[in-house]
Image 1 (cartoon, one colour):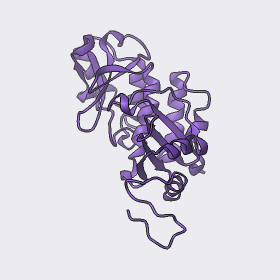
Image 2 (cartoon, one colour):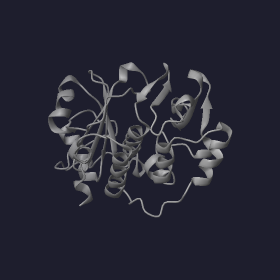
Image 3 (cartoon, helix red, strand yellow):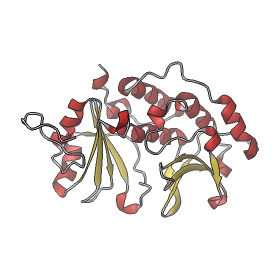
Image 4 (cartoon, one colour):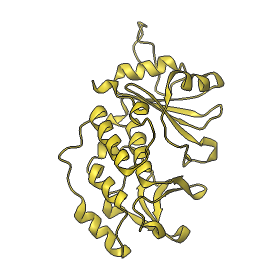
Length: 252
C-alpha cells in the first residue's frame, strides 16, 4: 500500500550515488503521488540554457530535469526547481548558476560556475548571510528538494506546523525515525539550522533547528496520517487540530 511508504526506511544507508537518489525519488513519487512515467522531455530547453554559459550543465542537473522537470507537483510547490529558461547566473562567489528559488525570491540554490564540469557538484544556498554550502552533491540536494516540496504538495491540505517546546523536541526522535540525510542549513539563518527530517509510514516531518522554539513542518500521506502526527506531537498547530476521537470537528 502506498501509505506504508517510509522515507527513512527507503533511504536506509543514505544517498551514496546519483542512481540511489533517482531511485528514491521514483519510489517516493509513486507512493505519495503519481508514478514518474510518460514525463515530457526538457532536452531542448536545457541545451538552450547551456548556450550562454559556453559549457554543458552537470550530468546530475540534466538527470534531475529529465526525471522531475515536468512534474511541478513534485518540485514546484513552495521553493521550486526553475524551468531551464529561468535559470540565471548570480555574480557573487565567482558566479553561481541558480536552478532553484524560494517562491518570493528570498533565497536561491545553485552551483558555482567553476564546478559545472563536475558530474555531481556541490550545491550552495544564498539568503541573508550570502552564499553558504548546502549539500556536497546535487543529487543529494535533489532528494531534499523533493521532500521539502512534498510538505506543501496537494495544495497544502495535508500540511501543518508547530513551534517545539523542550518536551516536544524530545518527542520527535522518540516517535519518528530520523531520515539518513546530512544536516544542512535552513536558508532563513543559523537560528533555524540545521534542518533534519523524520518519518514513519505515510508521515513526513521536517524540523528547522535543534533548540526550543524550533519549528516542525509535517505532512501526512492521508488525513488520518496527518492527524496521527498531530496527536503524537501535541503542539499548538498553526492550522489547528482536534483529536479524531473528539466530537468537535477539525477547525481547518
